[in-house]
Amino acid sequence: MTGSGTNSWILGRGQVAVIDPGPDDQGHLAAILGQLAPGEEVAAILVTHAHLDHTALVPRLAAATGAPVHAFGRAGDGRSALMHRLAAEGLKGGGEGVDTAFAPDHLLADGDVLSLGNLSVEVLHTPGHMGGHLAFACEGWLFSGDHAMGWASSLVSPPDGDMGAYMASLDRLATRTWAQMLPGHGDAVPEPGRRLAELARHRRTREAQVRAALAQAPATAAELAARIYHDTPPALLPAASRNVLAHLIDLSERNLAIPEGEIAATTRFSPP
Image: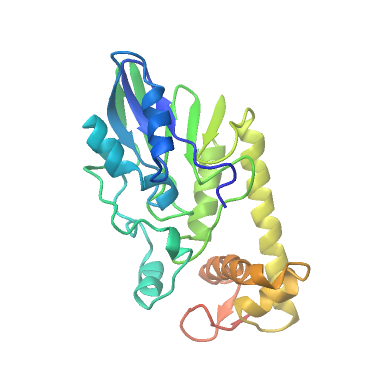
């Protein structure tokens, strides 16, 4: 699900920041250090979110450079009360990729500004893919992590993912004009506004499909996924079901779907 791999971005000159060190891979570490010019040093490690493909290399890069690690918080930070409850009850959403050991040196909040030589890096809290997901803005460039990518849509899987938060963050990013979007996976996006609109349109189309399928009869997320993703190989239906669950939770919070009892992975929903 990472495409060609994880992008680690090196920002600045002289005193640089590394955004998302990436997986625990010696070749990846050597590639990062090999990009530094003579005399350059890593002044900060910035992390968009605590998935292993972005953070597993953090300890080795921090040890090699002495740079402090900045992030929103630990892997579960930023979740809503509902997502905290679902996690406590054992629901896992792509949990094999969560870096439960990740612990930053410094916590970042929405609106913080980091100075990096003559550059200013703005912190944007963009929950959705994970509750503590951050994006970084610098001179018209948007480092979007996994919130918005050019090659695929992002995974939004409860309890780590929250569709309502994801859409709100996507809409917020779309209110600004960006020169270029540099995602956590895939190529740079030269027309960020167009891509952000495409991603929002894709999610709203999927929401309409969920509502149409739900209108046929009350159903669980898995049952709805089978109705909607009828051409999807059976092995991929569990992931599709989790995507549908994310939409159902969001719809229930907007009174557009009614859960039969407390929300869980197997809850049956009805149309309003």
